[in-house]
Image (cartoon, rainbow, N blue to C red):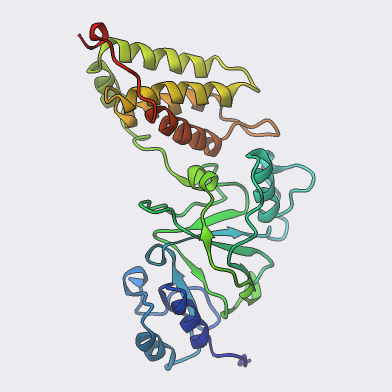
Length: 312
């Protein structure tokens, strides 16, 4: 069956007018068109190139998120028979939008409705945001606990989304991608950026980490040990507070130039990791990452004064 309606080339041009870089996908599919394996480099916002591409066929439209300066949050719906993991098995949580709503509630933030929004072929949503300046956020997957949560994927550098105006017909779902809020893409909220920012140096070998710490002044080593103990000894209900205080204190040392930020990250992350759990009272990697990032930055803005005796 041949689908009639607006030519997807018009949708590609509409994306380009917003400054987004596009490339052709297979007709009625989601994969890059043959010959566009290097789609991130070849995506374009040039109208002449877009007209040349789409004059050849009714290709669906892909948006290269990284070159377009976008972070797209993909709120999916469960496949038939799919059950939530234990962390999200609670009343009222049925899809990715519900999970995001729960995250908003936990962080005391409003649901980010006011941005460019698209419905997807299986009843989900794409929320489009502009990426924070100077960052290079990567893709995340709801299948892994380092992502935002069940049925939430994000697409940024290295990722693409199917653009509105496309129509996908695949065995796991058929339907259009349709704009439901044509607003400008809003800046990615800071708290979401924090959850999506990876911790640096988390994979450093223990031997290298130990050598770095051993080279630090004795008072800095003592601070690392003491703040790690503060975190590991925290009780449920006080874990985030302890992590916030510890990260702030170490941030003051990074601001003073006596503690490398990646070493502080390592100490804080490894201490927080003993509390990572699932369930209604979960303490998740995403929450820890956001707390460390914000508290380290706050501490660095108020650097500790180093006394002559400490510096000796």
